[in-house]
Amino acid sequence: MLLASLAACAVPAAPQAAAQAQRVESWGANDFGELGDGTTDERHTPVTAAGLTAAGVTRLAAGGNHGLAVLSNGTVKAWGANDFGQLGDGTTSSLSDPDHLTPGTVRELSGVTAVAAGCTFSLALLSDGTVKAWGNNFSGQLGNGTSGSISNNTPVTVIDPANPSAPLRGVTAIAAGCDHSLALLSNGTVKAWGANDHGQLGNGTVGGDTGTPVTVVDPGNPGAPLTGVRDIDGGLSHSLALRFDGTVRAWGDNSDGQVGNGSIGGDTGTPVTVVNLTGIVDVDAGDSHSLARRLDGIVRAWGDNSDGQLGNGSIGGASGTPANVVNLTGVRDISAGGVHNLARRSDGSLRAWGGNDSGQLGNGSTADSGAPVTVRTGIGTITRIAAGGNSSLAA
Image (cartoon, rainbow, N blue to C red; front, top):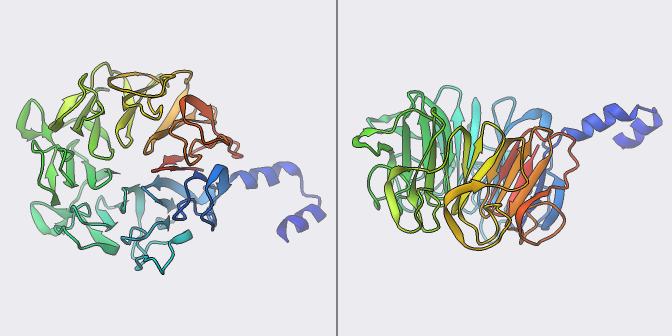
């Protein structure tokens, strides 16, 4: 009706195209409604997520099978799988209660500046420097001092380990692994909580999940915190920290070389230095691989390459040493999914590579690609991206 009315009034094409561009698109796996388009149909090229316009979305996050969007008014929309209450709307899906196929509002949440999505839980950073969490808490990934079978379908507060009756404060960035969480503090140190079966909490130990935040330690002095951190991210069972000097530290599972210290195999509960990396300005972690973006727009990758996720032109094997992603320059933003990656270029276009069994590369096929391909999005200029387990989002 609206389009017919506009056509009748002979509205110029340019403003109409601009309005069309203000949207969020999604593609890939959709078994749980994680594309937010009102269906459970797998999509090999981008479709529009219902009820979200890019003009009103400030941040995006994609989890194992759910999506999150921060709106300009500081509230959060969520959609997709809800078996652990990870959508935060006070409900929990069951076999007879379908997952949410279009975005709905997370309850009791305002003033949000950033979100992060794990496999089955969600995090939100508030403007006052505190953190809320909801969803699965089996490993303590909600950070509210509890763990086990207790999940929350509405947000709870991440606590201060020194004062469990108070919230963790001074947080400037958050990140979610599969079952663990990370928080960057204003003093450049990092807190972590949740699963630690591979040492992904970085507190010098391997094993011992915790629902209370612990301090990521300095590899040179395990009695002191890692300092000088400007960015963080979490993978399936490993973690990354970018320091202000442009170098990267990593810890946790290294079965595919994803901590990037030149070796493959074993776990490390203490951060190690990722080799052959300088001038880094952004990091992102996939299931078992890692990405880093240099200031010059080059992307480097290391870890598992069984689906081509390292972007080195091949499919198969693994690498414990970072190398450049081929045929890719001018990158301004990166996002690592389960086994695929997204890269937003300075011209606003989007590239993807790696696993594509559900069409998560968005190029119209389901063939894996060991080199970047162009995502067939209808958005003129991409401003925000998020790669999930087997799905992708762009605004």
